[in-house]
Each structure stands twice: as structure tokens, then as C-alpha cells.
Image 1 (cartoon, rainbow, N blue to C red):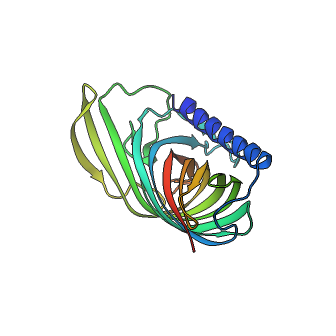
Image 2 (cartoon, one colour):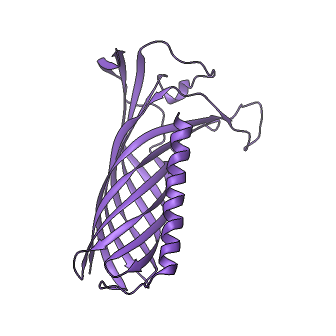
Length: 249
């Protein structure tokens, strides 16, 4: 199910990017807002979080020989709050950089990242382990914009440096689909506190005045939250809808 959700998210994002590019090239791009200069973006995004895991057998000795492993997990909702500053170089291309406060949550059926199950069997016990990553992200993005007058289409691709300032894990016991009890398992789960991530997004923005715009976009972020091991790799995914306010300086 997770693979299907991931595929659908990427397909929707690709479709939005492709549609934005076609619309931008086919319509007049004159606008009532400034075509060049600095701007700020304040945004918030509720995110659906899930993970994928790869393990490389130590005896293989190859960097590319990664194997996918089964993960029994429950979807979770996190969030991202961002404050960005951007530079619009011309009517189509620009850049953004800033900071994000992020919270990502994963619920899986193994206790720690170091104890990844090596079988593709479903856990019949009603016990899950919730790991919470509270992070500060420093993103850098390339932004494409197209459209006319008040309504514009945009997409961006970016990279992030992520700094986890708080990571903790809880043991959850479920009863009839509801959490019956929970307890803190351990403070340190062996995850890296500094790692990288990448972003893709596409959406629309609407001018409400000469300097102000409201923007909405679908976004996917992939974080390389690997544990401190050369043969295990955790890819942390989040996808959601971002709502932002843009102000031209």
C-alpha cells in the first residue's frame, strides 16, 4: 500500500509540474505583481509521513547492492512550518532559501532502527514503535513560475540540510485499532542528527494586491535519515499540501 501511495504522490506531482509548464508556455505572462526582486514566503504544510528501508548485506561488499525490506507501518501526520526569502530573477526563474521547523512521525513494528526485521512477515502483535523527528531544515530551491495577471503556476526543486534537535521513540499498544497505552522506549535510537533531504513541489499562486500573493502547492520531501551504519538506509518520505503567503519587497 505504501508503494502505491508513493507512486500516486509522484504521479500527481509530475502531472502538476507538466501542466504548469504547458500552461506557462501557452498563455500571456504579463502580471500585476512585480516581475523581479526579493520576496518572502511564510507557509505551513500538514504532511503524510511514511518510510522505506533498504539493507545491503555486509558480505556483498558492493555499494549498489541494496535490498528492499518489508515494513509494516501505520501512516502518520506531521507538519512543516517555513519562512523563506526568495529572489525572482525574471518572469520565470527564481531562487528561495530559508528555514523550516518540521515534525516527522513514523509508526513501525520494530523497536529501533538497528533492529530492522529481516523477514517479510506481518507482525501479529498489537505493538508498534513510534519514532518522532523534530528538526530544523535549511532548504535551497530553484523556482519556475509561469502564468498571467493574477493567477500564476509554479514548481520548484530543492535540497535541504536537516538538523534533528529532538528524536524520541514510544512503544504503542493497540486495542481494536486504538492506542491503549504508550511508554517511552529510549532517547537515542541511533539515527543521524544531521542528514540531507530533497523537495519537489508544484502549485498555483494568486495575487491579492501588487505586493501580496497567496499560494497553494502539493509537495513531496525525501529525507535520508539513515542510522549510523554503512549497511542500513532509511528513506523518510512526507507529502502534503502547503499554504503560503508571499510578499514582494
